Length: 461
Image (tube, rainbow, N blue to C red; front, top):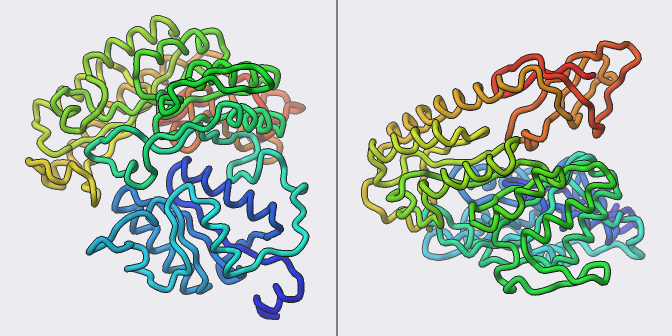
């Protein structure tokens, strides 16, 4: 039976789906998949077995653009009916036309990011939705692409900054905060579904509510201000009965971030902040059009650690930005040594089509950019290794991510210091007692007995 005849015979149409890019794109994918499921569509594990394929793309850096275009090409070759959404869908090509349509003119439709309804309209046009959709079969928290025990919670879309190296505002627009009641309702549904770790994401978590002037919203009949501090406080309250974690990502170091440190010190949310510093030298930050200075960042880090000694800070940096001198780069290395960032990643600067930084003078050769990235990572890894070694002998709570054979041969998990996919892990040794088992999604106490690269080694207690 052909795909078309299967649909005509009443079988649920099958949609292939590929999600590329960052966690924010992943939450867009989850919204689309939730709506597809609500309307009675099924998913396909292969391009060839689908009635239509949706590719959610990334368009931020050149490697991501290539991966997205290659994936679209594969889907067209194996299936022929492809809808493209995501950041690459909003990217212009030569002459101002749509890049995706220039490279793959046979795609059925192209949308930008956070465009669930536009995607669904295109799906309906090419693969009509089934009759009598069983909406009640879709869980309240929607369809998730993460393991059952953790989930991303997007609190806003877009960004008001105009960093010279970034094109996200041109693809995702200015900041738009979700209503606080909607955010808290989704968080509660996720905890009730068994989620043990909620990862709060956005383009700028600290700016939550700025676009609506921190207006007062309502949740469970009570007024709640649309602001990061109040949101984090309520998320901590929701998580507490479930013993769940709340982890904050993309937090710009604004002064009001200090207000959440007592919540971290008190155990209401994880003492973990993902802060995109990008650089330390004031002249480089100025060329980047970043909203903070390196000197204030050192002061703020010191203040945070004073208020919450156990806090872990992760960050990302750019080496080899246009015009970066050796003195400015050494300033960044000194900052890393003094700031002692727990987890740091570094990108060698890469020009992005449409970014203002492309017009800056002083572009550095690729070899210099890569050499500086390697030098940065050597310093960052030395700092991280020293901080990991300090944990040997400590007892830590670990969320189990993998436990083959019920963990009798050991497993893998993460501590509060480790976000999924981007940080290290805790390698769990086999339990000392034969009756002791490990289960994915459970918390276990472990004594840290060693380190292994970026990771810890723990003995379950």
